[in-house]
Image (cartoon, rainbow, N blue to C red):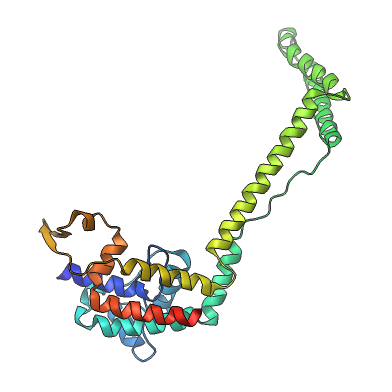
Length: 280
């Protein structure tokens, strides 16, 4: 029972946040009427609990850092506690404080528009000529202080740069054309990658954060509707596992809903459906 109690409390803690498509259960919180008592039971301050709600919802993973008293909370009060946790979480997520935190993270996550080189073929030619002329000057300057055997080793490199320089100066230089086309292709790839990243950012961080809330709520409703609360468990060593191998293969969040129990899940589903209807 101890393991089930701990799992139930973790599930309660996740529910208010509806974290992401895979984390949907309970976040730390408590109503204003019971907040002090709830925080005390969890071994958290109100500030820590609210911070856990914020970080869990914004970052899409369960955060219950500092909740040192999980084992000491009675599972029998889970429905009453869940209701208070949900109410508080909804109030907080709908607050200006959370909206500002979301906007700050949204802005920080926005992809930076790349700086591309919008150059002409002649711009590329000038750059290559200047680079090659500098290389030639540097090699010649170095050769002045080298021993004859080292000068001989450097000579092929010098000749290569001199031949390249002649090629670059040709009006119809094939090498310059290839450099230019390569730069244009790179610019196109960079722009495409940016547009894809921007589209993903807009999906992950909608301008109206309530759209993200709706996504979290719907994800919870979709998943919780598939949970079979009549599923049988069996003892396997020190753990309980599902008799049905298909259930045992389910993701952790599916199992968390099951362990939370039908009473808590029904309450949460009703709450989520009502909240979702208010956002439409």
